[in-house]
Length: 448
Ligand SMILES: NC(=O)c1ccc[n+]([C@@H]2O[C@H](COP(=O)([O-])OP(=O)(O)OC[C@H]3O[C@@H](n4cnc5c(N)ncnc54)[C@H](O)[C@@H]3O)[C@@H](O)[C@H]2O)c1
Image 1 (cartoon, rainbow, N blue to C red):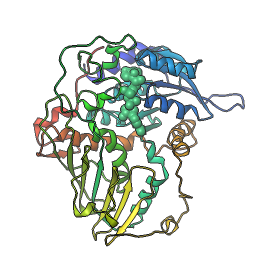
Image 2 (cartoon, rainbow, N blue to C red):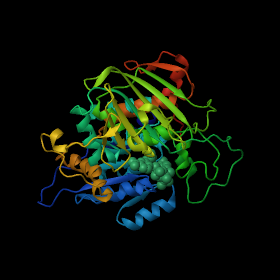
Image 3 (spheres, protein in one colour):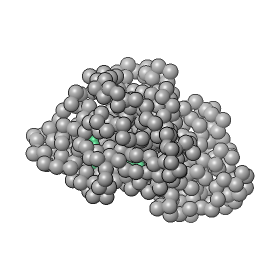
Image 4 (cartoon, rainbow, N blue to C red):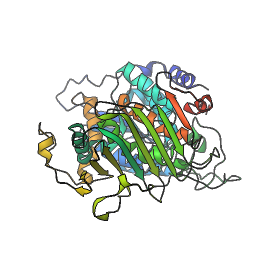
């Protein structure tokens, strides 16, 4: 089934409950409460739930999960919320009782659930990466813009002090024009093993059909999919690049104001169509911007062994590279290291760390004192979303931005299907010159 047909079927079924919400009509002086629905409430979904619920103007109205144990744990915290296993039922039956939706499911369900929520005119906070397919990112951006909905992608570090500071420093020219960014993660969300054979009994707590959702049918195997390990597999996740790259590449992408790339080359093992490679090196070239040299390159490394070392990556005093991070390299050799995460950016000149005074760059006084407290930093991104729904703020990672970031990331993941081959991307047409790669930009939706 095509995505459009899936949504049309669902919203026609919903009939009158697809009417726009009216959260603004409040006759009393009591603060307006935003009634939230949470799709996926285990692991990160629980963190999302708690962070959103910590906003004083949030009432958690609905909880949805395909794993009854996860649903039960969330329900114990918010006993007044309605519970659902199927997000379609939630939106169809309870859509008129909610004002905003949070999607914290595995990646393959981000777009189906978020697009449906947006069809019901709901503001959406969706976890990263925004989607599993490039076509879905484009659709999410289009629908959010057409409907003028408040949206936010779940890259909470976007709102952390150090990332905002790095963005400011780069934009204020601390290293001049940037010619290259090298970024890396030592995580391994790949799987080089064989495709598992046979099937295991589906645990009673799990609705496997709903978990698969729009993705292709597959026998259940314990430990391969739910929870978390779906990240390693092509049908559901987006590998380490899609997982950590979205966080780590966000600051370079934002600070340098870059668009989707022109070329992408990924070095990794041959694809087997099941698990993503465990080690990847991805090269992107982009059109230059006001903050970069005319030719600008980005290089990504993932895998437990860390990046391939080069002179550019050597740190002063023989310091080891952080396990994850990004290094901005200026055209004259000055560098800015942004470790991931919760460390101030480090300025490097002629092979030595150099002090910098934040206020010399922060001429408008927006940064304040450095914050080194995750518990204090983390809710900001979520509260910004709720404040935007209330009409008192704007989100900093709306789908208009985060869909392009996600598209860029996903193009590198697709290039891994063609190791060592440079793919040329036409951003207007959203198509590769190499026609064989175009099939991976989108996918069919299964009826479920
Ligand atoms: N922003 C961050 O720092 C961060 C950190 C971790 C994970 N994430 C993102 O959060 C998302 C979830 O990751 P995770 O590690 O929690 O995965 P997980 O597999 O551990 O948990 C996913 C949850 O969603 C539920 N679920 C699955 N399919 C569902 C469906 N169709 N409807 C309702 N619920 C469903 C699962 O039962 C589970 O409770 C991913 O997109 C991931 O990239 C973001």
